[in-house]
Image (cartoon, rainbow, N blue to C red; front, side):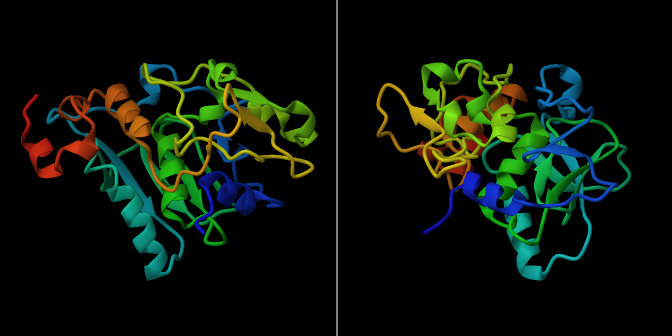
Length: 255
């Protein structure tokens, strides 16, 4: 069975020892300062700029030595944004700000554009999966974990007693970019029921129905896609849900 994105991330990031040249990482989010909580991307400056043709080009380089099979998975993740949004991950020529995809210690990314080169770490040892690549790229575009939404207590009960003590900060609520969308149990940014559990018991329980399945995403959900398109003002993609319209038609719809 496919592991959920949260399980893959937790497994890949367990017991990693980071080098002195790596950023301060809290779970899978690299932080610019030493705050115990990820900076929510809330200002225009943390978005990637829109081009005059209405597309958002995010330059990237892929460094280190991934196998051709690993590169295929990474490329598929990068390309998956172009059929459903105006985001275009594009190989860097000489742009100042860009994403540097590397196999460092574990899986992590900064939240939003931070300026100059910013690492997205996709450790060959555990991070090369479609949902993990999408998850880390969504961080780089400005998005945070679903369970840190400020309205999460209406949808999830956090069971603090079951959380590993030094992992409790992963459940701090922050002002995330929800873009007017509902809480989404199926977001690729939503962790699984036993995330950061010290005893194998649930750390998150959905409310009001505790039996709802959640945190099992194998790829971006419709809400994830809607948020990208609203945040970045991708006009032709915000009109309808992409599942119901062939992409060729979507592309032909003018603003």
